Length: 494
Ligand SMILES: Cc1cc2nc3c(=O)[nH]c(=O)nc-3n(C[C@H](O)[C@H](O)[C@H](O)COP(=O)(O)OP(=O)(O)OC[C@H]3O[C@@H](n4cnc5c(N)ncnc54)[C@H](O)[C@@H]3O)c2cc1C
Picture 1 (cartoon, rainbow, N blue to C red):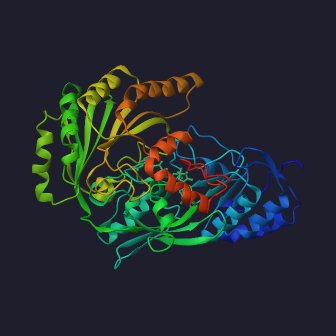
Picture 2 (cartoon, rainbow, N blue to C red; picture 1 turned 45 degrees about the vertical axis):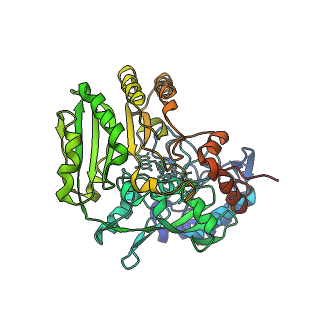
Picture 3 (spheres, rainbow, N blue to C red; picture 1 turned 180 degrees about the vertical axis):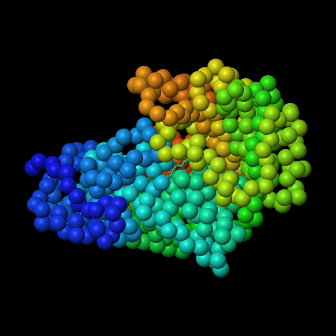
């Protein structure tokens, strides 16, 4: 039957307008839709079944051509351009369950969108169903138990904002519009991770809709193996509709800013980081970027965040400031929640980015030399080190599914640009990152699943000894591998 574009819902128009339009559709005749299964075969979705799904949801069900469809399918990385057959804008766990059941019964390809920041575009799909959680973003703080309960589509900034009201915080990412769901399920580095551990270490419970459509609450006491897997095993086990985080009392003011060194001092600055990065106090977070600044040239910039006793900051930062004379030093007292938004604009939705990354366990002199050479010789945009250590490394590798507990930092090489590029330009940029990475990869031990896109063998090796346990959990909760747009844990197929 011929595909016709029409309104299944009133889309962003709100609930009052949604129901009558959906009712109209139900009496409007059957329109079949071409779609794709989880294993890539073409199928047809019967219009009557699509109607039934639309009627079963509180949120909108969007088809191509409708207002809101393009907005929902546009994820953070502007290079990703995929067209789901259906987008369910879920308003709660019941919608997630309905959409999941619809997908499972047809073996339909599923993508789940939290914040949409998967760099390789794992939260949108071509021809399947996208479960868009962005309307599910309410956060509630329980003061007594120091717990934040955040809906599955909440952004990092939502949690920072609500927790700060009560003088609390937990580890969250360094760009406030990143999704808490994707970030936490894969691990979760941030400016407080050396104090409090990864975001996933602070995940104390979750609501999850598994592929059987069931809503489960998990914690260390309820379905503990699934809880263990959610702390780093990604979106392999279902759709998390609420995340429960441990909060910590935190001074809402931090002392933070950039300490920049000229390129001539780059080696000394990086050697300081190499030698002392692992022994710094937990309350100091130092991320480092090598980047070219217009009118200045190449610089090494340390983003310093001191979340401890303000009286101690000068003595803590003195050794870094003494490496050489900084060409800029903007460190000052600032509200933590403001600082968490400082990179939001430079990483706005729609920028285009290609990245390679890996965990650096031993920050050697050879790495420093080669990083400087690569940056000098290559057109790449940036080399970035996100600091690990502290509380992150005081956990054993098998305490959680997230296995990287010996890393000094997470090294990333990327090319980022705004606006359309030609095919040749895109290929050249991707190729420059790849060839730079070929030189740097030997200094890494595994990678962060939230940033890299690897094949099954790569994923297996990356999770190391945790992989067999993850497979057991996968076999129990998603034996058909419906949830596979992620760093995929392959179930053992019988
Ligand atoms: C600008 C930017 C800044 C970043 N900063 C940091 C940082 O500071 N620290 C850090 O550790 N990482 C950071 N990352 C990486 C980030 O952790 C990943 O991109 C992560 O996947 C983003 O989650 P999301 O929900 O926004 O992404 P999405 O693209 O929506 O989802 C990513 C994956 O998680 C799944 N998923 C999302 N929500 C759910 C859910 N509720 N239930 C089940 N599955 C879900 C999706 O299906 C997909 O597989 C950053 C990325 C970007 C682009």
